[in-house]
Image (cartoon, rainbow, N blue to C red; front, side, top):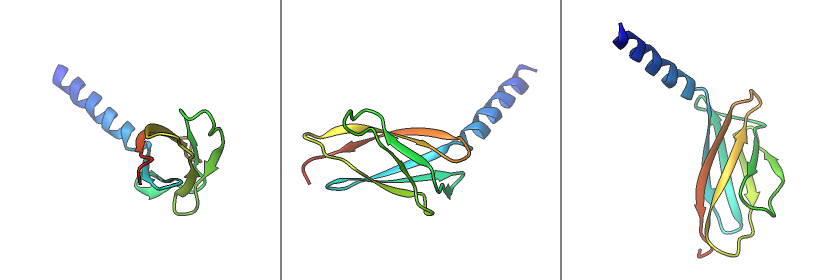
Length: 102
């Protein structure tokens, strides 16, 4: 009986993580291209923001391909936390390292 509970709990966790948004970040010289997907499909009109850069308080919307460019002006290399929220309310976040030495 307890193995059935473990199996059920594992299945619930796997199913719940498959509905979250996914964020991919490509570092560039002046910012980052952020791609948001939901269930493997591009998430158009997802809201993307940067959480740990005080001068970057704006939220950006993805295009029909789930992509958006976020301009960044950094004085030194650091890890940036991106947050995304899809139109369906799914949320995700990811850290990405950005280097000033390009």
